[in-house]
Image 1 (tube, rainbow, N blue to C red):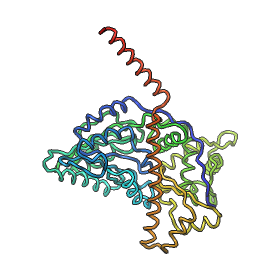
Image 2: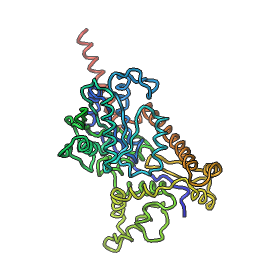
Image 3: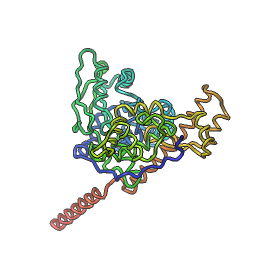
Image 4: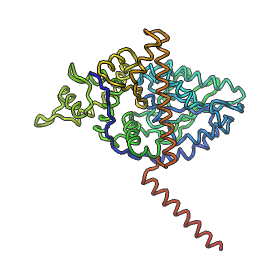
Length: 433
């Protein structure tokens, strides 16, 4: 059985979680950037677009232009007298399929240039060494600069403190105790850290910053999906969503990642088929795991919690390693089911439809699994990813234009403050006259 049509489930409206320490850091960022040489922006590999911190984008663009980058071409630098680099590290790389990484880099370079993309995992020493070498090489390019200052930014729970601890252990020889506390829950780091030395020669220092959420996740279907995505990766404070809502979206997403044999089938009885309905899935899971309440009633709430916890602890790795690719199986399934297209996804942010004609075109041009076939598949995936990035940019610009990034409560507060400012100005004019 293959799922050829996977509808997006109805999701709850997103909460607004923007504590005071986030607002405080956002306001101080422009001043902080004046003594920053490298911005190391961490995102989650599963949410490479959703974990873009649009709240900080304006300050970063201004910082780059002041340091000599071309405002019309983000990849070109006009004046190059001091270091000014923006590096995007997509952490937890082992939780997304390998086959999409190269097309993603190319798609981002084409649609959102001006940022170096690095996939990494703090559990892989080689990734940490490569990132450390990148920072050291930037410092060496500017021998007249006394030290390289790195600012680490990103949304909550993307692994900023953990990655910095690993970089310190790599760059400083000898005993190097963990310098920053870490937590699985978002919001532990609430103030800018003191400087942490990452390298002695050349001297490289880093600041760890608080994770900063968007002030509001958005309205409608897009905002609802954005909130649930962040909650699933624990980017939003625990308790703002019930587990059934998270399980609903997780079931949907695992179906998208592999509509033929989704990862959750390992939790169900042998011979189980892909499922769209959450209640049906939770009932099978609860029965398989013996989750029963008094009166022999299946405990679906407990099953939902187990499902989300399983995905966070081990299911994510399984989903990444078994994600479907473009191959002859996809074409055969389309033919057998008389379908016009099949869904494919990469991570939680990329999803597209593959038509039978697109798959046949690849097979007409190349055959087998050689370099030619691999290149043709990568080019098609890159094109699909470029379309997704274009949609994200258009949606972001529309939200900014329509003030879609501000909740009704926040807008009300904003209007109240503006009214108070007008009254104060009016009173001061009366006194002066």
